[in-house]
Image (tube, rainbow, N blue to C red; front, side):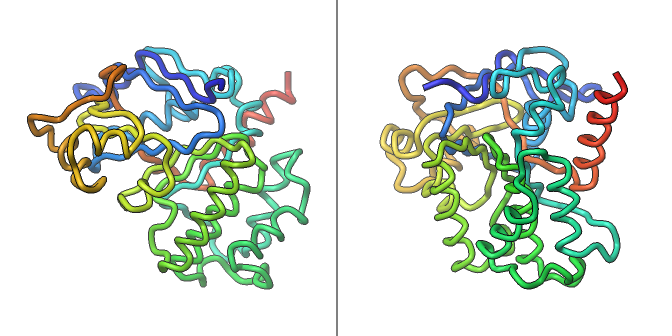
Amino acid sequence: MENAVEVRGLKKAYKDVTAVDGIDLTVSEGEIFGLIGHNGAGKTTTIECILGTRTRDSGEVSVLGMDPVRDRKKLFTRTGVQFQHTSYQNRLRIGEACEVTASLYPGSCGSGKWKELLEQFGLSGRTRKEINELSGGEKQKLSVVLALIPGPDILFLDELTTGLDPAARRGIWGYLKELRESGVTIILTSHYMDEVEYLCDRIAIMKKGLITAQGAPHQLMEINGTKNLEDLFMLYGEEKKGAVKPQGYVNASPLLSLSAEFLSWLACLRAAGEKENSI
């Protein structure tokens, strides 16, 4: 199985603060990979470097065989991103947001695709409703829909079920499992350990810009004798003594959690397209 993401020696610092400290990481095609860690562990910066929306100081990054900076336009057409915090233009309607997003991706199959997604996520028949009138959970669902409109080969999800009720969470979990079976690679961040344990084939636990543990959740729990993933998270996240790394583990540094905005993403994509067309 080939790797969808390859990261080697990734470093990023902000003045005197090192956010990512030389991490090595691979994510296989068709895998659900979880990035977990305390706030400020470095998840967001790494994801931004992987996406190419933030310039890395050093190291190598490959996503679907492409450089995220040099091949940004081509890569964005195959990538879906759901941000934890998304801002929308005042009075923007659900249908308008979907239409704008679909127009940026030639392979998105037009309105038929996003209307199916709205129905899948319980938002059908509400295309004319203003987004600012939606509940927090409904906005979260919409952000996932927008991430899926491109029909991505790789999907980045940041705290995707925050604000959702248990039934809605379970529904999205099932849909993500179906995406994985279809070959879509998924990288997610979450503070819900039950979600991570249920969905993820492998995880990386981050602390202060370093990956302190990496492997299959059940393998890490068995090796360290923890009863659940939350205990494992505390073991590695708090850097307690006695944590055992699985065979073949290579210590590295972190990946980060997303904190950009939807309109910023669209502006970045549009700018890349305009630059390409002007050449």
